[in-house]
Length: 333
Ligand code: AQP
Image (tube, rainbow, N blue to C red; front, side, top):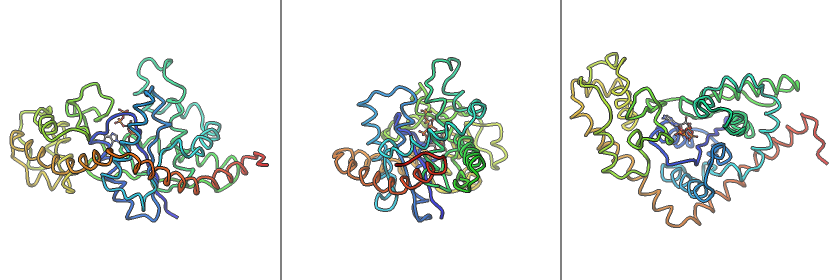
């Protein structure tokens, strides 16, 4: 049976990239699939240092964001990862299935660890193995993610295949990444070749889901562009990464294709296009931010949602872990 799993790290303020690349797809898929699970991956977050009070706050904020963006906790299962211990338990088994050589090829580790990889946590290195466990503990078949996570979902398939092969079973499914839409990789507003990221030191590089209307408008006005007007065909954006990025954002926010947007906006100067983009962004994002803030006024409701979500998630995860242990040969007295 088809089942959807995905997650976001409660490791910082949320960006427009997280929304367009991931959470908006989550919302669409809750109606397209019989069962969807969306997680706040707090175990992943601590692969880099997190202040405990901040982590608690951001986990609740992320839950509020999910709900504000349109996830219905009666339908989708919303929970925080550490509340379902089976994730970490399956991850250990996968640590023993995955090969060090596979991990060495992961570009996200290289990006995040930087030059000083010796100082990175062991958890950051093993991140993709835990992610495989997140997905496969639910036998999830579809994982909506941004383009940057494609490699990790492919590794999940490798781990599933090796487990099935080594133990001679057909137990874990082959998961498909769902990378769709015009904003699978939202780029930095300061550099069209870099991903928009919550950990970029420049706040001007991203739109945060907590930014107010003025801030959003100002960041878009100041976004890096070239001096040419928008081309009349998509082809004309080929070597213009900043222009391409703004067109993609416009397309995603208005639920249209980039081609469609160019057909309408071709010939316009950025002085004209940027205010239109800013208005659209504010129109879509402001209600979400407002609702998120409202939900954060009384966190008891959020905690109740997460408590129930964890129970529902565990009901699926527990038997899968039990069967895994059985296959591996662990006594379960
Ligand atoms: N710029 C982006 N464009 C499209 N999708 C994106 N995602 C993140 N940035 C973009 C998608 O959001 C989901 C959750 O991401 P995450 O928070 O778990 O991890 P991340 O990819 O590491 O996000 P950041 O913002 O880049 O965080 P930092 O700065 O901490 O590294 C994923 O599906 C991701 O693809």
